[in-house]
Image (cartoon, rainbow, N blue to C red; front, top):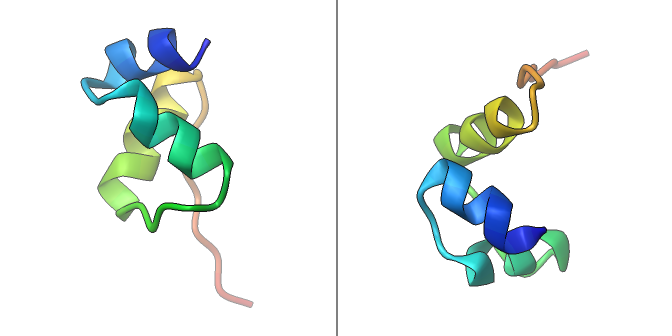
Length: 47
């Protein structure tokens, strides 16, 4: 759930909701925390 993810990364549930609704401009650090909490690795590529 949003609450569980928020708890894992130390943020509020509302931040996760805003991220999902494209109403938030997250930092790379925040996205990295989300990725790690989901067992993924954040990769940024420029082509």
